[in-house]
Each structure stands twice: as C-alpha cells, then as structure tokens.
Length: 344
Image (cartoon, rainbow, N blue to C red; front, side, top):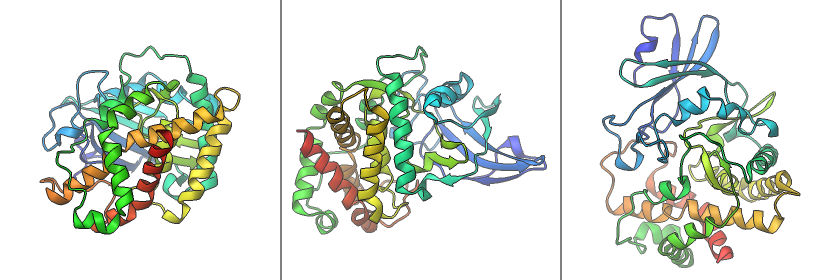
C-alpha cells in the first residue's frame, strides 16, 4: 500500500503499520517521522470503497456496528480521551483532523511509545483489566448522549459473520485438530447462538470499547493507552474483559503457555475494578457469557473456509497456515466452549 497523498512531497518518512485491511473503515495506518516528531496517520474511509468484503463493509448509519465516522468522532468529541480516564486508561491525543478531497478523514494522532500489548506480561494485563473494570463500573446505569455510538454491537457484529450451512463439522482438518467433544460443544454453541445473545441482554450495561485486545493496547510510562475506538458504544458487562482474554491468543501473537495465567489475572483484575459495585458471581458469569457469545461464529467460519476458500486471501494478523490455525486455536476455543457450558 502506497503512502496517501497527504505525505507526497513532504520531507517525512512513513511506515505502513499492521491493521485489518478488510475493514472498509480503515484506509491505512502509518507511522510518520518528520519535522523532528513522530505521529500516527490513520485514514478513515466512507462506504463504497472497492475490494471490501460484505461482512466488513461500513455504513452511513450512525448506530451501525461499523459506522465509518465513529472513531473520528470519538477522538474529535473527546469520548476516547475521557471514557475511562478516571480509571487511568487513556487514548492517543488527537493532533489534527483533516477532511480529505475524496471524502475520507485523516486523523493525525499521538505516537505512543511503550510496551505493546502483545509483549505485555499477564500481570500487566491484569492491572489493565482492573482499570477496565473500574472504568466500566463508572458507566453502569449511565448513557452517553452521542448519536453515533454503536447501537447493539455484540449482536450486530456476530450475526453478520459469513457462516453458511451446512457446516462440515467432521471435516478431516477440523477432526484432526479438535476432539469430538469439543466439536460437539462448538456445534451446540452455534445452534443456540440467538439464545446466548438474548442472555447477554440481561447483563448489566456499560460503555464498551468492543475491540479490547493486545494490538490495541500499549503500556507506556503513564499507564495503559487504548487504541482504535471505531466500535465504541453500550454493551454488556464483561464483554471487553472476555475479549481481552480470548483475543490475546486467537491470532498466534502471544504464547499459548500464558493462557491460564492470563485468564486468572484478567478475571481477578476485572473483579477488583468492579468490587463493591457488582457482585463477583455476576461478573464471572458476564465474562463467560459474553466470551461465548462473541465467538460462537468462529469455529463454523473456520470450517467454511476449508470447504470454500475465500476469493479474497488477504491476511489480517494471523499469518499461520490453515492447519496451524486450527491447532493453535484449539485451547482458546476450548475455553469458549467451557464458558458456554458453564453458563447454560
């Protein structure tokens, strides 16, 4: 991907950073060096960009799960910087917002130096989870008035993942990587997905980031910095903590040997942040229920890709071959299935 026109002819050096190239909301992210400083340039693109798969398309509907202007507005209107600030979680500072001739928006953001979330220790993740719990506690029973917050992100995102029937649960690659009991549990989870989503509706509601995982987290000298606010909106308690646990391991970016410790540290940290506000049993159930609800689609989606490989083979973050992906995702999927069984 070439640098955008904003950089052409300037005495700056730019480096394209890892991001999800399938998401129509993001036209690219660059680290830019020049004028004695370093900044991040993120291009936010409107609907209609070529080459975007349907399940990553953006919308002009402000409540849509992938409303294209949401992140820009979260920075411009100050929600990203204030949402969890009292709990010690901040966002990169917005240096400049530029409306571009093609209708997109250029966000010039603070470059945050520090320890990336993928290199954070379980203790660091647990400390972050405690702050996250405190941030969620402050939003219980409150509603932000912005019209551009995601309306029902967990349901809207998960039910638009492209899974087609029938799902070949006995496919040789799936059978080789996942025991029969695990496949049966994941199949039942898929069948009962709507029941699971209805159950999450009964959980306490808070303000969720909806994309808390290591690539969106940096630990710097002032504490944790949370990136990518494009999905922010109301959601069930526990969802961000559950996603932090699971999505730390799904893409092969963190050693699976740390899984059990991360589960323990994040869970206990999140409980500390909510202590005295929500009882521990409710918090534990919320993590398990939302974790299962967030990923009911993943196993059938993976099997679909074995039987009908996608025309668009662009990679996001997981660069392993398909068989290695099945093997590597077994343990986090076992956790998803166990959480599902425990909440029935």
